[in-house]
Length: 169
Image 1 (cartoon, rainbow, N blue to C red):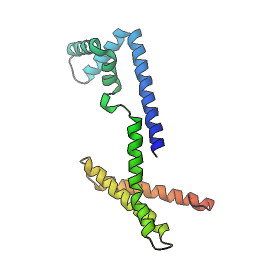
Image 2 (image 1 turned 90 degrees about the horizontal axis):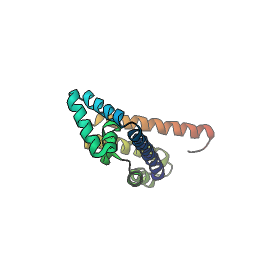
Image 3 (image 1 turned 135 degrees about the vertical axis):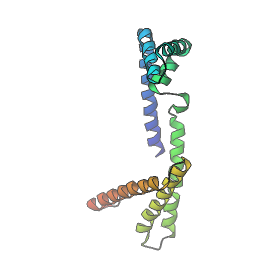
Image 4 (image 1 turned 180 degrees about the vertical axis):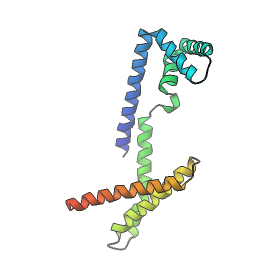
């Protein structure tokens, strides 16, 4: 899980770097047009044309690439992809998330683990969906049910494939 998250977030970081390189090229080849484009962005956000031109010119004079990255591409320092941090968070979440189903497997009567593990996993996932919604200040029921539904579907599809090929997957 951590490796997949690292690769995914690294790919996102590479895409952002490529976008920034394109912006840098555009700034060196067409600085006037890039300033006009930034001015237009500010107009669309509600500034009067004269003020939008002034803001765009001042920000471009200070740090043109930063202004374009923030206001055209939506990149900020706080939102930059952090692959190592994402991998660590994924590894931690995966480990913690495996605790309840693993405990269910240890505590289940012999032969009951096949039902206890997915049931415990679903209960835990629904609880985590509700917790995530609560932490974000959102109503908890809909996200909890959404997590439960899609994870139950994923488990059913996985079990179905395993059943078709005659092996547990």
